[in-house]
Every structure is written in structure tokens, then in C-alpha cells.
Image (cartoon, rainbow, N blue to C red; front, side, top):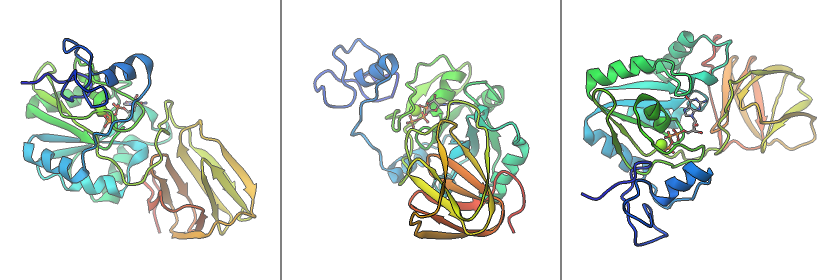
Length: 307
Ligand SMILES: Nc1nc2c(ncn2[C@@H]2O[C@H](COP(=O)(O)OP(=O)(O)OP(=O)(O)O)[C@@H](O)[C@H]2O)c(=O)[nH]1
Ligand SMILES: [Mg+2]
């Protein structure tokens, strides 16, 4: 059997520098790409992309218990749709729980996620950084023996496994790091890292490192808020709460820009900006935004009723 890279799972080869799995010496455990990510923090783009449908078919064929990981800031319909298509036994694991703001009660958050997205299975919050609920995950692996850790890119699959076992899987803030299934043996049972599903439209590289501090704006209707390449306003004076990476600057400006795209939102809705986070809108209103491509609206998962 050919040797695979212990960082990303791709088959190692020493013949083509430009293809996946290249290493100058097959005695190495890591491919050159993983070596560079780990030691220099540089990410080399890879042409190896698995189509979401093919990845889903592979996971369903394996018939292992599935832990579907999703990052708290990045829950949206496309991701839940894939979760719902996993046929066998599964649980939804909300990762990076260390980033969840202090004002949010985790139990309530879990219940809201189940209600908003119609999830029947258990929802569990974990953190690879603080170790929250790691022992619970360990117990579940012991119980099920073979567990596939799956989810969209950057959900934190490889990081969670490194926390659970003495593994050296490659982790990075860039998309598409893990390239194939990798078998890892923790104390008991077997866990498998997997390549991430790729979202259709998302803003890459905005994952926060520190706990999120919600930023509240009492926004008058004559102003709009600008952040990254987005501009957003409400047609009435409104209360907007931003849940995103603290390093993203938000600027208040007077109208004058053409924010041509519109969505009507109910009271207590989250406006999701895929890959970035979400904005809780308190009052029912019409939201104007310059680019709807990355935007989705849902009843808030933070609390409050969505009338
Ligand atoms: N704050 C925090 N960051 C995390 C946690 N787990 C992962 N991250 C960060 O999230 C990013 C992605 O982590 P990975 O483990 O590479 O994610 P992945 O799901 O394996 O990604 P792919 O291999 O591309 O599918 C990295 O920048 C990690 O440092 C966590 O528990 N807390
Ligand atoms: Mg990975």
C-alpha cells in the first residue's frame, strides 16, 4: 500500500513537484505542502478538490458514525443541507466554542440551532482550544468505535482530532487543507479526518482567533455601516448587533451610496454573511445591502422571538 502524508492524507510521491503529495524523499512523513504550512505558515494552493456530491457519497458509503462539525459563526443553509443528507447515525458538533461570546447561553444556543434548522439529533459544543466537551467526544468514540469527522472546510476537524489523539494533522486558516481521509487511533476506537466540503460562495480567511465580542449599533436610517466590502442599512432606526472577527473594522457613514439590493427581515433575524459571521437585527425592517451573494437570513439563533 502506498504511503500517505500524515498531515493531509494524500498519497506521497517523489516524481512530480507540481502534483499533490510531492516530497523529495519518500522516507518523509509529510508532503512538501504540509511541511510548508506547518513550518512556514504558507499555504500552497492545491488543485485537488473533491466535489461535494462525491465526498457525501463516500461518507455515506463508509457507514461509520458521523460527527458533523460546523463552526459557530458559520452555520447556514447550504451546510445544514449537506448535514441532512448524511444517511447514517450522526451528531452535529458546534466547534470553536471558545469563540462564543459570554452573553450567550450555550444550552439555549444549541436548542435554537435545533429549532431554526429542524435538527433532530444531538447538538454538542466543543473547543479544540480549551478542551470543552472533549471527554464527552472521547466517550462517544469509545461507544461507536469508528467515527468519521466531517464538515465544511475550516470547521476545525483536524484541530479537534489533534486535541483528541496524539496526531500531527495539518491545520491552517486557509480553505481545503486536508485532502483525503486519514485514520487516527486515539486511546480507544478509530477516528477519521476528512477533506472539507467547499461552500459555493463565502469570504475566506475571516476566522476570529479571540472570543467574539458582540458590537451593538443603534443605527439611524440615514446612516449605513461599511465593513470589508459590504455596506448595509435599515429603512427604519434599528438596533444591529454584529457577531464577527474583532479585527474587522466597521464604519458608520451617511447615505449617498447606492445600496440597491433589498431584503425584508422579521424582528430578531440574523443576517448571515457567509464566511464572516452574522448581524442580529432587532426590529422588522427592510435591509439594503450592496451585495446579496454572500447573504442569508434566518430567525436568530441568539435568542428572542422572530415575529
Ligand atoms: N478559536 C478556535 N479556533 C480553532 C479551533 N479549532 C480550529 N480552529 C482554527 O480554525 C482553522 C481551521 O482549522 P482546521 O482544523 O484546519 O479545519 P479543518 O476543518 O480541518 O479544515 P479543512 O482541512 O480545510 O477541511 C484554523 O485556523 C484553526 O486554528 C477551536 O477550537 N477554537
Ligand atoms: Mg483539515
